[in-house]
Length: 199
Image 1 (cartoon, rainbow, N blue to C red):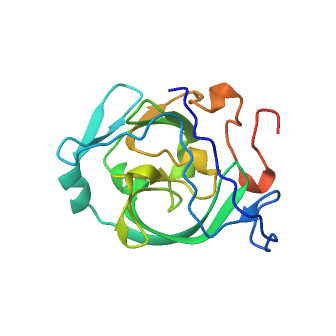
Image 2 (tube, rainbow, N blue to C red):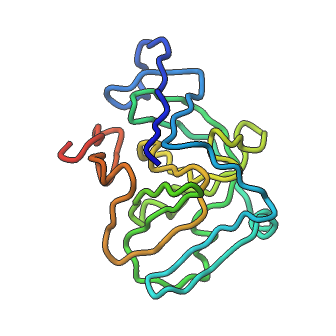
């Protein structure tokens, strides 16, 4: 990686009461990514959960579609300061994927097609807080927004919602991902403006 898209320069609007500090509303869905957009064929797509002992649990695209799916509406907040409210998604809750996984891990590292990684505490992916999403606003998730499937963790800055996700590595100790090793915050709570290390 190393190529970062130039960003988004939408017209800023007055912040509303639902916005975290420093954010502005947008009606668009800006595309920000590090590196080129991976194109992942559904017949070769695979999602893996890898435990701290190396045990692998995998799902093909067809197997993912057979799991119970949820429709959810959430606000999303990008570290570049745009927020988009009331976004509608469909996908599989992370706890559904972890139902038969035995682990003592407290941390996860999400891996994406294309090489991107980001770290999220395991507790932040459970209890209806995170999904592997494959539909956005009633349509298949477009590649530029992370399709065919992306992680969605709406209570954290959106760089934690890894596009083109292909797996979760369960870890006993925290391990920073792509942006975290470049100085972004390890946790990334938008309501506490945790944009960079030390915030």
